[in-house]
Image 1 (cartoon, rainbow over the protein chains, first blue to last red):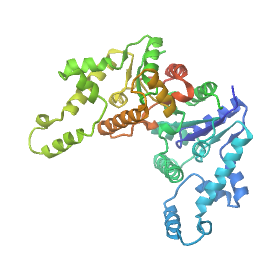
Image 2 (spheres, rainbow over the protein chains, first blue to last red):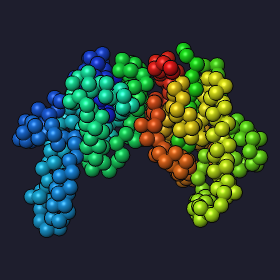
Image 3 (tube, rainbow over the protein chains, first blue to last red):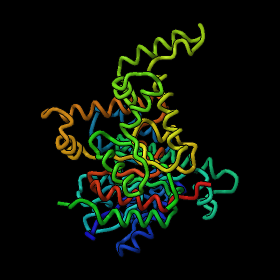
Image 4 (cartoon, chains in turn orange, cyan):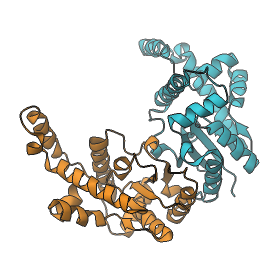
Length: 207
Length: 207
C-alpha cells in the first residue's frame, strides 16, 4: 500500500478517535488527535486549554470576534485586529500541513480534510453514527455526566459544525467533501477500520 | 450474508448505475433502476416519458404546482388538487416499498433511501465523484452531446437535489442520511462494488 495521509472527521461519540487510532496502529504510522493541541500551544503560545476549547469548536461568543473583524475592515492592518480564534486556526493549520509533509499519518478533526485538500495523497474520511450508539459510546468512556449525554453530544457537534462552516465555508458532514463516509453504528468500530484500510489500497495514484 | 435491500443514490456520471448493477449480479438479487419507470407507469397510468422526466427531477415549472397546491389549502379536498408530480411520487414510493417487501434487491435513486428508512434491513449508499470523472463517464456512454457535458451534469444533479429536498426535507448527499458514501473517482467502479459488498456482510442485525 502506498503511504498516505488519512484525515478522520467525526461526530462526537461516533468512535472516530478509536477508529483513527486503530487504523494508525495497523498502518504503522503516527496518529495525531489531542497531540495537535500540545503542538499548537507550543507553536502559538496559547494556553493548551484555550487550544483545546477553541481549536475545533466555534462558541457563540466568537460572533463578537466576527463583528470586531468586520468593523475593522478597511481601517488599518488586519493583522492588528485578527481575532484570537483566527490566529489559533492558522497556527493549527500550519502544524497540520507540516505533519502531512513529514509523511503518512492519521489526523483526527480540526478541518484537516479542508486544510490538506490540495494534496493528492490524502484520503478524507467522515464517521457518523445514530444517537443511541453515540450515547452508549460516550457513557462507556464517562465522557459526559450521566443523564444529559444526548444534550452534550448535540452541543459538541453543533460547535464542530459551526467551526467547520466558519473556516471552510462548507457543510460539515456533506459527503462531497470526503472520499469515504461511514455510519459506525451500522458497521461497528472494527469493521470501519477494515473498510478504511481496504479503501486505502485502492486510492488513485497520487501523481 | 444476510439478504438485504440496498439503495444507491448517485450523482450523474458517478457510475452509480453500473455499481448497483454489478453489485446486484454479485449478490444474485434483482436490480431496479429504469425498471421502476415501467412499473410506475403501469400502476399510475402516467406516460413512461412523464415518469422518467419527473420521477426524480424537480423542474422549476413544478413551482406552479406548489403554488396551486398552496392556493387550494383549506378550500376543498386535497386529493382533488394534488399536483401530478406528487401523485407520481406517491405511486413510485408504493412500488419501491413493494419491491423491498418482496426481498433482497438493489434499488437506484428515486428517494428510495428515505422511502425505506424505517426498515431495518436496508443499506443506504451514496456515490459521488469529481467532475473530470463524471464528464469522462458520461462521454464514454454518449449520454450528453459533446461540449456541454459539464453543464448537463450540473443541471441533472441540481434537479435531483431539488427533487430530494422537496420530498424528504433533507439535503441530498448529506452523509448523515446514508450508511456508506463513496467517491468513485477516488476508488474506481470495481472497488466501490467490492467495498459495498464487503460492508453488507458487517451490517448490524435487522431485528
